[in-house]
Length: 252
Image (cartoon, rainbow, N blue to C red; front, side, top):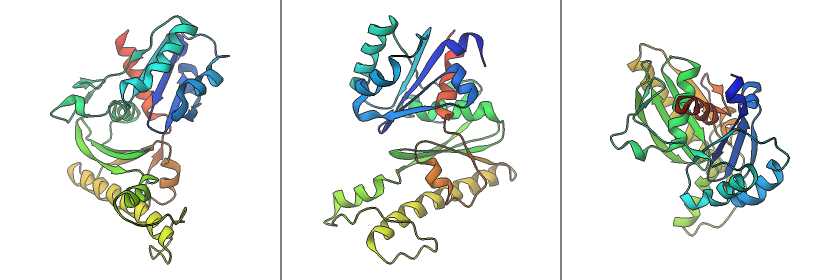
């Protein structure tokens, strides 16, 4: 990486966080993060002193109005309009597995692109955010599909929305699966649901690919999940931005 790409800014707007890095920072493994609930305030503080990038590339899984403040800021301060990432049928050696291509979130698509660039090995890609998505891709770059779970932190909220269960605060995760208080039971259940689903999908991918399979973790809660996943894996916090950078190369 370097040259033209180093003058680009890559931005990923999720439901909980906004993450960004320049091309040069991606090369060095630097990733910035801020809460997404106050986008204009977050970027005003973080971006004002930043050297003006030649291009801004933006991926967003939220409704279009969530990007309005950021797009206006970029136009006002840097006199350019962000280029919006899109989910495609085929790109960078990856084939979309969805019948309706637009239903696959752009973050998931970019993570697939990033994963394919890392290795041609069949892979399970776990993106741990407000929701947790788990996607499979074979050794030919074909997206086989995936599943979506409420994120680790969202599990308790889902229970409270549909039951009269009171709030019991943050629970720890029981090491032996047997919780002896409600908060721990919820936290442990959330983690077990995640790790069990990942293991099942990983083993099914192995069966399809003669025992070959990798597992990549990304997203804000990937570190929390990694500590409990008894499966060989690699943490790639910038996987979506790496995919965004690859898509930006193709757009030139």
